[in-house]
Image (cartoon, rainbow, N blue to C red; front, top):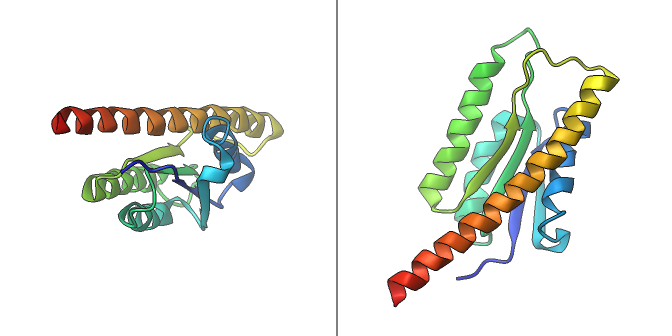
Length: 148
């Protein structure tokens, strides 16, 4: 089955930065083929990603978040849990689940840092779209080879 729809999950934490990944993603995959879902933060992404992947509606699910060291909790623990959860969602469902989840060291909420990360998230969004299209092409090729 050829899927022409994609799900894009984005965390609302630091949305002024994270939303740029969707912009990059839709530079390669038309926005009318992308269903967008918001979650409060990165930690909530894996569960929704799994549900979306299991729905059978999407060829791939991309998830974007910025996990920063806020000094209160171990951001590396959160980041690792999120990436592990996203990988598990893809492995459990057989649908590619892609991560645009970044964990910068020493992020500062300055105009300069925000500008750097906004540009970086656009690029990472494009890379996620390239990955989604690439893995779907490869899997389609494998399926057609198997059928032949």
